[in-house]
Structure formats: C-alpha cells, structure tokens
Length: 311
Image 1 (cartoon, rainbow, N blue to C red):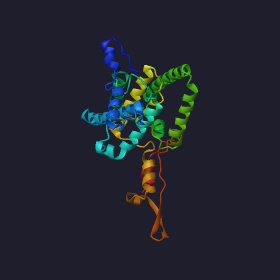
Image 2 (spheres, helix red, strand yellow):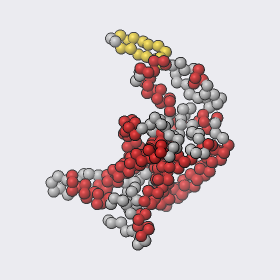
Image 3 (cartoon, rainbow, N blue to C red):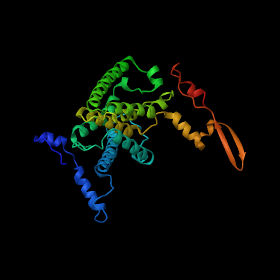
C-alpha cells in the first residue's frame, strides 16, 4: 500500500521518507534474489526499516562526535570514533535492535525514521540539548545514588521535579492511548519486564549511575504509541542516546565497579596492585584473590575511603 501524503508542500516535505522503504526493498530483492522464486525470506519491509534505523543512528553518532568537540562542549577527550568502533559498536547495534523492536519501529508507517517530522527534528534536538544543558553549572551532576544524596543543589531537585511531572504527563497520555487501542495490559507487562531486566538488577548497587544514554534508551523505546507526540518523544530519546554515546561513550551503568569486576575476573595484569593473595593449584594453575571493591557511601556522604581503603 502506498502512502498518501498531504497536498500541502510543507507537510509533504516534513512527512515524506528520505528513502522510500518499498523502493529500497524492491532494489534489494532485484540485487539479491536467486532464480524466479517470488517467495524470498529476506525480512521484508521490517528488515529495510531496521537497516535504515541502524545506518542513520550510526551516521548520527559519527556526526555528533566531532560536532561536540568543535563546539567545545563537555566531552570525554580520550574517546575517539576508533574507540567507538572497536569497543562499543557491537553493543550499540544490540541496543538499537532492542529499541527498534520494543519501540514498534518495524510497524508499517508512512513516517519512517528518515522523515523530517517527527524523527529528523526531534532526534536532532535530542542529540544536542544534553550537551547544551551542561553549560549550566547546577546541571553538572550525575544521576547516581551518591551524587543525588550528597551533591545535588536544591535548584536541581526543582528541575528534576519539573522533568518528572512532564514524564508523568507523557505516561498518562501513553496509558490512555494503549487503553484506547486495547493493548494496555500487554504494554504494562512489557514495561514491568523491562524494569526487572534492565533496572532492578543494578539499582540495588551503590555504584548505579543512570547515564543519560541508558535512561533515554530505556524510556524512549516504551513510548511506542502511534500518535505523533509519542514518536516525537521517542525520537528525542533516541537523539539523547546518540548524544551520550558520541560524547562520552557507552559507559557501564555500574561504572568502576563493573570495570573492576571484569578486570579481576580476567586476572588482568594491571590489577596486581589489588591482589590479596595467590594460590597455586598445581599443574601450573594459579588462582588470585583481590581486595573488595569499595564504593562511595551515600549514607555518610563519604567518598574518601576510595583513596584510603584501596592500595
């Protein structure tokens, strides 16, 4: 079925896909089909939409990365595009695949990921606003237990409350949309499952740090109603995810605790200063034990022990 676009030139420009999904699928099938079999298991339009989504997201990361440094925004100066390809690309593709499926981006729609509205405009806004916000001193804090309990100024709590109120309004509108389309129960089950899979296992740790790439990824894929405002928020969340990856890299949400676990589990040589003892089990096998990782104590607002407890 071909999409029907508005007679208005402006609306047609905003809503038309940059690359037609059906045309791209036909070109792909002409290129790859072997023989005359009309039934091709190639994923159809869903596969076309996924590859467009992957391509545009990765290209956006490649654009925002140098842009942030040219604009002299707050960035990780040690994180390069080569680091992104070597360390983060594969897991970013998995993130985007999950976002694509849960976000219902595979559903046939005339407003694809490459349409200017809402995707182009709101993805662009999402990819730059988090960096612009860093120019405000009171926003230069993280969403971690220690920072929230010990370092957040009053004005940041007010700002966070405003964002929370806006989020609640979006959630209420989503619930109304899901109820109207008779999918409310399935969406609630889905949201609870995502909470149990991605938030709760980590939230109990004092090292839990809600990076904006993670928070907006988790929220954005659940804004999966068909209304334009839901897709607009989804696009903004995708842009914020792109900003987080391009500017800081895909840092783990457990921060140094995760890095410590991986390094000790692999017995990396640079962790020798943390070795507590070595046990020779024979046949050339040696096991190592390490001192425990110490996290900042938000209950006492004391992070000094990180410098004194660890060698």
